[in-house]
Image (cartoon, rainbow, N blue to C red; front, top):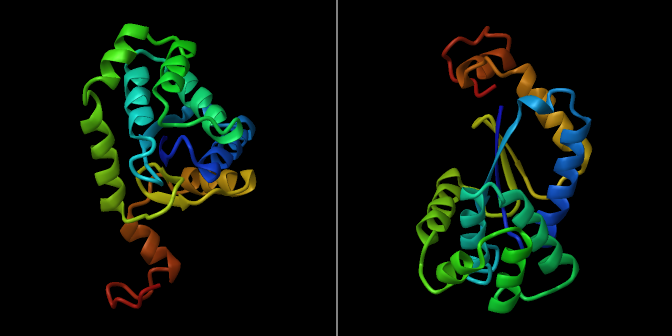
Amino acid sequence: MIIDIWADVAHLDSYLAKVAWESALAEWEHSDDVQIVWHSYQVDRPSTYDAHRLLHLAGTTGRGDVARELMMKSFVTEEESSTDRAVLLRLAGEAGLDPAAAEALLDSDEHGYDVRVDEATAAQIGFAEAPYLVIDRKYGVGGAQPTAVYLSALNYARDHENETPEERTASACGGACGSCGCGA
């Protein structure tokens, strides 16, 4: 099961959702079957652009989760500036990134394309809030939700993983309407 998550690293609701989401996964019996893919989303553009570029760099080295956690705590709970170069470089170092690579990234537009692709995908999906989760590329959950909501969404997605959208629509009315377009 693939979980795509669009979140901002300097956004309270994104941080609260991350905490609740991680609690839900810790409780869910099938969490070993979950692959999480984080995507950039800027609530206050471009205040976290460089932070998101650093996260993409961290992701290439397997340090993405550590960097995301450090950034969210720093920007949300400690209220450090997400645009302060010294803060970004310090967090990159704490996350285990090569300091020279982090500095080179900030002096360039490296991984800028990756941030823009994430934003364009969010626009295509059509959500306008962060965070936003898409489970198995079928089911969306927007905004910060309690752990129970994420657990419910995971169970629903697992229970319906082999259904196509057409089957879900037909099952709403028991399939009796066929193709009449009743909207059920």
